[in-house]
Image (cartoon, rainbow, N blue to C red; front, top):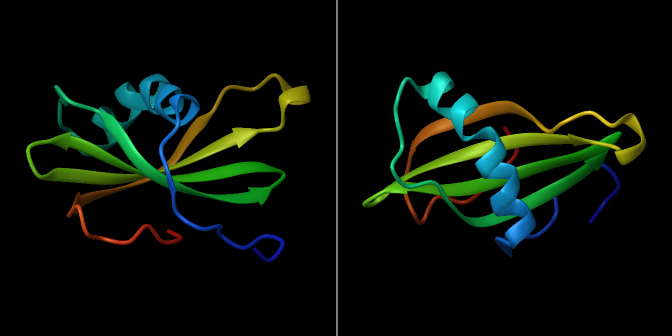
Length: 98
């Protein structure tokens, strides 16, 4: 991966799922939806002054969204932030920068 570039797709980890859990309410507010299911499937990262996570999330039967989550560097003691959200995605849609 080039510095500042987006990495390869990886299966979601418990840590990535925890980021999603923390930001579920923000994603629901952004989309105007309430999600019974909110399961991270896969993700890519981009190292910046912290880390951007691009996460594919299953939000129900064959319904998916992509989240961009910014995780500040640990020394800042700042929480993760939902930077952007793409709706109406399909399982086969590639995660890309947005």
